[in-house]
Length: 396
Image (cartoon, rainbow, N blue to C red; front, top):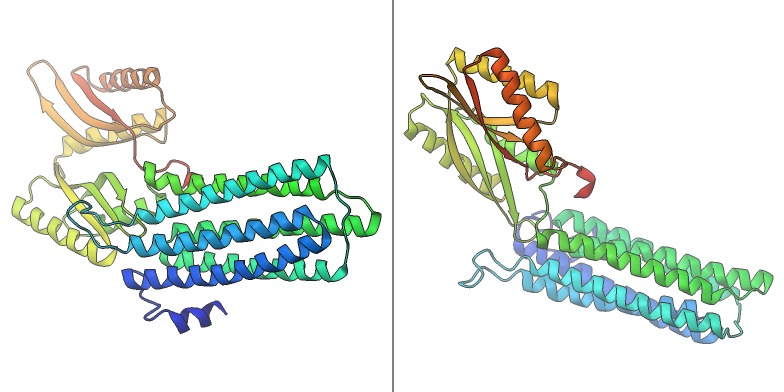
């Protein structure tokens, strides 16, 4: 069904990097979500009124909020498509994140309303009506929500849409809430126990938790999140594959909406290589990165010694010392500056984020001591820094 809808309503559906195609995917997701959720709302509301079940009615209004969320997602996707202008030179892609955050707020608000209604139902319970057909309809609604969740997740992954992924998570969360509602009806039908208010309370908490999780996922790119390790490796490997590039470091990626990123990176080039040649290579990489990866990349050139045996030996020594202290430590931009009384070793050291200032200073002293054991003239000038890549992939 998903493939049929995509092929039927999204022109040039395979070209997911195209802004118009992404918008078409968003429109399709929103319209399908609105239709399905309005149908579920009307059905469950009638069932809830007939059976006097607060949990069913709570589930119904949760579906109504989902329909509103789809409308907001539709508006967000359309607005995010607006091209760059004088006030917004990087485009309007982040509007999609803002619309997803509004969806999260609506989900939390609905959950809170259900929470209050469930408390009232626990205090003053009403007689329920059990009917097998009601359970059957609710089971069918679970099937609809399951399909809708996987539908949005599949589309969201295709076009890297935060709104669609948030909608998918919300839909799959609704499966659990409707299952809880069915459970309360079955318990009442089999044992005569009215746990509707308690189940409604559990449903409301689940809805609010889902809203908070959606908010966290959508706020992260707005605040500025660490680089996904997969993206980090992809960009580094892309740059380093070109002849004339020795290595890379200090990669920073700025996100301005799904599939709209700017990045900067330091590329190490042989110091003996003609600067015009290096500059030509760097220009070519920047153009190719935009064409192949869709990332606007700015490259800073760092000249490094590649044929100096003494510098290479010092690099190897530093590498061995760092490996003995902490395997996560990395260094770059090593320069060896000879003086009359000492040899300055100037380099940047990338340390894990769990290091505090005291650990930084201790580490600096330890490295200096170990290097002076190799040569008493060595004097380390170290600049400490953190990586912009996520150290824990699960945090992405």
